[in-house]
Amino acid sequence: MKILVINAGSSSLKYQLIDMENESVLAKGGCERIGIPGGKLIHKANGKEFVIEKEMPNHTVAISLVLEELVDETAGVIKSMDEIDAVGHRVVASGEAFKKTTLVDDAVMVTMDEIAELAPLHNPAAILGVNACRAVMPNKKMALVFDTSFHATMPDYAYMYAIDYADYQEYKVRRYGAHGTSHKFVAGEAARFLGKAPEELKIVTCHLGNGSSISAVKGGKCIDTSMGFTPLAGVPMGTRSGDIDVAAINFICNKKGMDLNEGLTYLNKKSGVLGISGVSSDFRDLIAAKEAGNDRARLALDMFGYGCKKYLGAYMAALGGLDAIVFTAGIGENTPSVRAAVVSDMEAFGIKLDAEKNAIKNNGAIRDISAADSKVRILVIPTNEELVIARETAALL
Ligand code: ADP
Image (cartoon, rainbow, N blue to C red; front, side):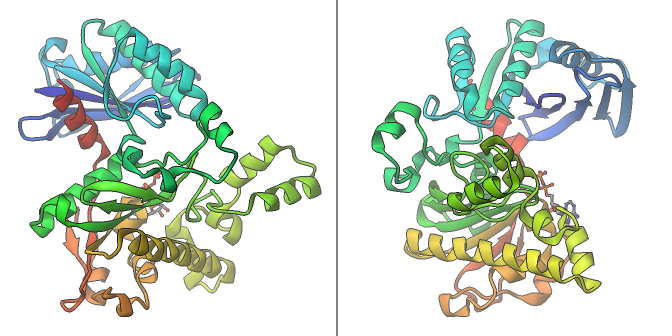
């Protein structure tokens, strides 16, 4: 079975064609500048990279180009589109409308339109991607795989905000979380690596990338997660503030003459480690700046490590113990100093890092970086969100 995984943004579209026989990636790539002059498709297959420069006025043209490449004589990996068994679409937010991976039909797409406002930067783009694929491949089965699904198992006291209950009922304002496919994947991989059934394990998964979120996973199910109604909540991030007293942003808005929307842009785009350091949102730049003596870069890194550590402690309490901590995504997989900061001074809780193992460069494999006498295993696990989307899509068929 071959599954095409689609991740559509407002002006971009990433894809992978995955052979489920051995879960190998047959081809992958992305379209850039959809709807903007200067469209470009980068397609990787058969050990080569193909660059196609062509205007893509909309997502339908983009997906048509991708399909042309997939069946092309030299760049292609399949003989005809019939070899694609189904398409799996990544969707950021499901609200309470969808709790699990869902087969696309007209009624589902009506609901998707209704909940688009929950993730105004992401869901409308996913809808464009689905509609484009349906236009070009009308008879193909398609699944929506939601970033929020893995978090649908949170108990009500974890996902509720302490606001007027009527507003929760009317507007469905609550914690939904994000990065669910990644948290699900690495929690499953951790159980496999440790040779245990997921049901036996209490795990804290740390997806630390440009956006970061931390989840508490008990018996294979998410019981709490750091992101909230939107991805703005939780630990400080590249450009997002993470948790903040909302009265503080009201105060800043009044001082700077900003309205609430401008205030939210400030918190989403100009805050986090970028805002603190004034250097960069990229952790590689921050570490270089800190080493060169920049104290605000030092502060940004310290705030990030401390912010993650507080969630780790909170989730140990929520889980009632801990078997493993998992680090994943760009920072989690590649940045030893951040991992060390998150688990520092936690020997009293049975968490002890092996500094040498932690320093080993990422080689794409799962690594146990805990000391031999650590009660809690500390693991580095490369994430693979596309594979989860392909697996979920295949399972639905
Ligand atoms: P996104 O949320 O955009 O998918 P990533 O998971 O790619 O983000 O993470 C990006 C972050 O990972 C950046 O802050 C970057 O500095 C950090 N990082 C550190 N080392 C590496 C590396 N070798 N490759 C990629 N990202 C790295």
